[in-house]
Length: 405
Ligand code: PMP
Image 1 (cartoon, rainbow, N blue to C red):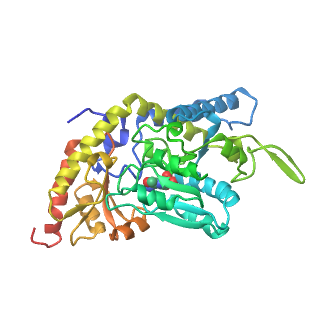
Image 2 (cartoon, rainbow, N blue to C red):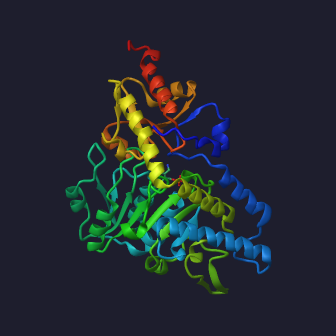
Image 3 (cartoon, protein in one colour):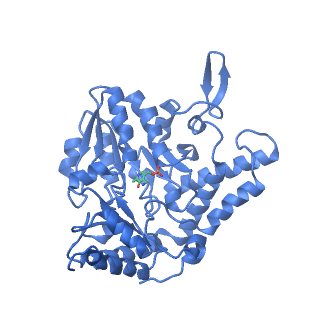
């Protein structure tokens, strides 16, 4: 087991006296991210993209450098294909409002997987209501697998858009994006990938995946809150109308109309979150220094340990794949006879922070016949001792709830 001390990089992890296992909700931030944000405000603070004086130009340069860092990180062809948003939710809404409402119509189909986070479902329910396009659910096996048969049935000549998470925030399973983009492109559909849970944990190459859009949040990959990204292929972004209108996103405005700025500015209305973008770039550099080989190895070891320990308890049921490698550090489970809210309260009283509920994926839980679950989600900075404490605490819960074991 790798026991490196990554925690020295995280001021909050060093101070807190609880065990943080809610990383899929939001990660902790290393001091280099906090320093990058502070440095921006202390040394470069001016409204970017507006002024011609040195400070504003410096702010602009930092902001555009951050765009380049994101571009290289996810292997986009050009920096202009990266749009800064507030988070995954806003990125997906941008695609729904700008692409969905304008390019879909009655008779078309939108294929969405049953395991989507509400952020990659509600926007498509809205597009379906507004355009008359039909929503089709791609169902998975209880292990989270989207079978070829299910994909072939659901991605057909009527399909115009497929919405799919690369990694489920409940099951942690990795979906076959490349296969899906091939099938979708064969019928002329675009693929919108929710990368919120994949981008922080595995190398993502949008060109190799041939994804049309990819959304993710900064805060889940140790960047600041309030900054997110949307990747889109340039030819798609160029034909899409703006999502939000106002300052910053125009070339010129006249009494009876406006000429919009080129991409990506067309989609970044109002003063941008330059400090957030700079902080996100610092988080990406930090991740790159650790390296995904190391990160994935460490997170797999932790997941294996958690699944073995929890799986040995007969009344604990782990959702999703039996293979820890197909969990991306996410272990959701139920305990016979104990509500997940009670589970998380008891864990909390033992100093363990986990998430309980429907994890914003109610259709998946309904489909699996589980009303809610408890989710422990790991990051490479967690330790084997923390996982052992989780297992130990879980093993006492039924007894503490008045059961005999
Ligand atoms: N998609 C997935 C798969 C997620 O896990 C989350 C966050 N729980 C989101 C979308 C939404 O992310 P945000 O709240 O940062 O917009």
